Image (cartoon, rainbow, N blue to C red; front, side, top):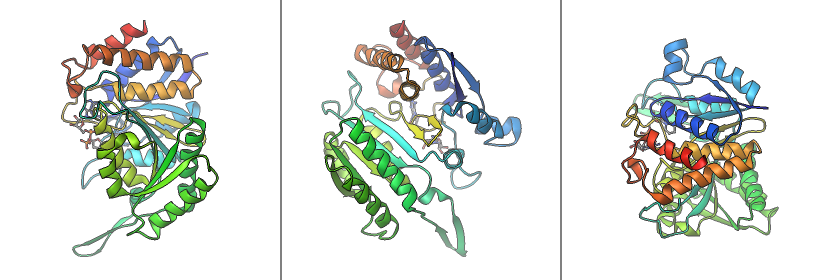
Length: 335
Ligand code: NAI
């Protein structure tokens, strides 16, 4: 029977990388029935709503989505569709594996970088609780709860135990934010105590950023509150070739949304230059989540073969190909 999957193409380069990825998923031979629904600018144009009910109706049926990026206006305009989606579906884990692809030349390609980010996905400064206290004074509330902190810490340690990982590092700024980040850290320590076989470390976020640039190969699993997780995700993407590479998954109790780390890339949108690798690797995670392990492995191997050959790579990773040429090369390897 075909897998029913919600497909949210999104904004900017979203439809380009989503269509490329859908083609690659179909080329694995796995039977898929896509339920295509719009969120973001296109949805707003068609329905007057950035996040229409049709998205949630589809997800209530499929419990699973492949999603392109959705843009959010800066310093004005509507609230983030991504944050709203993650909160409403309680997708409390943001899972982002960061690995060097074979053959890809980056400043760090000599290093065996293989780390995994567990970013809390529902609270922190993304609570969106901002107000004007007085003229010229704005306030934004940072919300950290025991329940969400425990969930992300458990997810990180359970993953580490399951996958034979050695170390989990909690990243924080509890020297300054003693109550909020202090609670996050306490939860991580409590969960760590149940996993004595896994080494546990704590790093202040500024130091963590320096260490990640100096010694990225020494990191294994990282667990972070929402904002640091967001920033550190892009930093680590930069280590392995940029935002065109790194995949992700938003995971909850009974729903999962697979999407890349990158945004809608307005600077290259509509030009068929975008690198679909990040969303294709997200689709590989999705196939594994569906139990289609063989297809997941074949898709990953096809992507890696294209990188190893180095002939059909997109411009962001030093090649000259567009989205379609790269996608066809991946599909050729799948066939
Ligand atoms: P961005 O990730 O869209 O772009 C940053 C830089 O990376 C740009 O130079 C872009 O061309 C490049 N880039 C990103 N993905 C690429 C790809 N697949 N192939 C080749 N180059 C790629 O970040 P930016 O500019 O900060 O954000 C743009 C919009 O995206 C904003 O409205 C933001 O809110 C939204 N956004 C959405 C996310 C989501 O839907 N999950 C995540 C991050 C940002």
